Length: 188
Image (cartoon, rainbow, N blue to C red):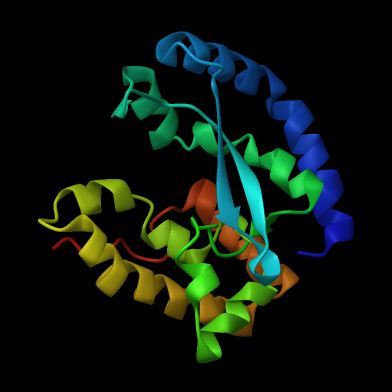
C-alpha cells in the first residue's frame, strides 16, 4: 500500500481505536501488574531491527485470562499502528519476526527484506492460530523451523510477486471479514 495512503489511514485508525486501546491497555497493566506494554526487537525492512509495540498479555510466562481474549481478537497487536506511523511497518506484509529468521534468509528468499513487515498477510491469516498449532507439537521450535517458517517464506515470496494496492485491500478485507480466505494451518 502506498505510504501516502497508509500513513493517514494509520492515524485515523489510531484515533478511532483509541478508546479500545486505552481500555485494553489498562486491563493489560492491571492483569500483568506491569506497564501494560510489550516492546520487542524484530527484523524490519532491509534487515534493520526495530522495536515492535504490543500490549503485554503475559505474566511470569503465562498468558493471562484477559490476554487470551485480547490475543484471540488480535487487540494486543493494535499498538503496532504506532509502528506503521513510524514507517517501521505496513498494513500488509510479512509479519515481523525476532532476530534469527528473516535476517538469516539467503538466496531468493532475501528478497523479502525489501518489504516492510505488516500487521497482516496471507501467511498471517493461514497461521493465525500458530501458537495453538505449535503447542500441539512435541518439538515446537523444530516444527516452526522446518514446517511453518519455510511455508511462510514461500507464501510471502508469492505475496511479493503479486502485491498491488488492490491485493493489499483484499488481504485487509479477508483479515477483517473472511479469516478463512487462505485456508487454515495444517493440524499435525
